[in-house]
Length: 478
Image (cartoon, rainbow, N blue to C red):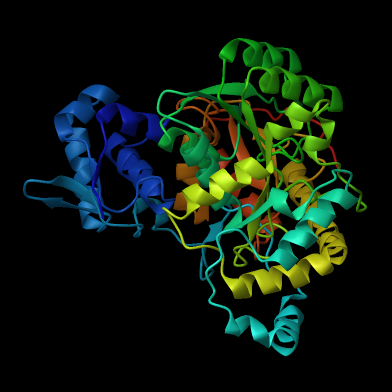
């Protein structure tokens, strides 16, 4: 594994507002430990030397030395001669030392439903009806014709005429986003992303060497005027959007804003990468969701849009089947670039994916019931325990975006970790140093008792602040 050397400034950005009212060395070690545990500091990362980190953070070198020593004792890092302080992996840190009694730790780090209940039956059908799949070589960089046909037909049925040659099957949405960024962006290109947004998409843009600017999404809705002004003057090469049931807010973009964004960006020669992995996850009764690309007014506007879909959020995270819908020449370009990094999507996964899509309306109806119940349970618990917080009025997706009213998101994450609750801080969803007033709260968290999770979250919030009088606000239920 190649070592990644972090500068003191970069580590400070990742740490966010880590200081509280306790012992600085302990807060620093716990905050670094949380970054390791959540994968934001991967194994083999090399931490900054003590002196430059102390200067960057504005603390004494003794504080940094004590924090590093605590991390060494917890076997999160080790010091290697000639290499420095190296991350070992996500082991137990001071932030994980207090379990919730005899129960296991609660994790709200992933916003994803559990496996669909009909999966075992799909597996049995696949074995009974498609044993011939095992006669194929299993290497597939474009997608099985039958699966591409089913995906194309679903887009057509939803109001966006699509042919199979406009579809590439991928190893999930994450793979699709990184493949697009790597293929279409060059170092120094300008790109756009909503803020807040899906963290790994931002990483994909940055990994391609792009300069990243932001399109603001508020807790109550999109800032249309600012978004359009930014697109007009950015000269972006690529924009990444989650227009329906946005992650993390659960909001959807107004129709008129879609049309204007497409026109602004496409007329400048930019590509729009539209992530629709949560688009059909609705709250309330199941309803059709028009694909974003159907809002394009002109043929060349259509050609500028690459739509990413996946079965990971709807069927099962372990079913690594996603896709890209794009113009045929872009699909060919992406396939040519793909072979550098992987050998294609597994045949057996595609068989299961095709069977799941045959029953997709049933899948989505089941998900709507589950997510609506989870959303209601989450907001009811928050209204009881944390009435001073406010929340985005989600209409679908997997999470709400909570405004804490105070810039304490990173410290809240650390306090929660001490009580056995893992939750990512708000700054993880935007630029370093922003969103300290916010936290993402999933109502799709497989195997999590949301009422109990909010009880722990409330204890963490009350335990890390002075007395305050709650100011009740209305939380919107769908």
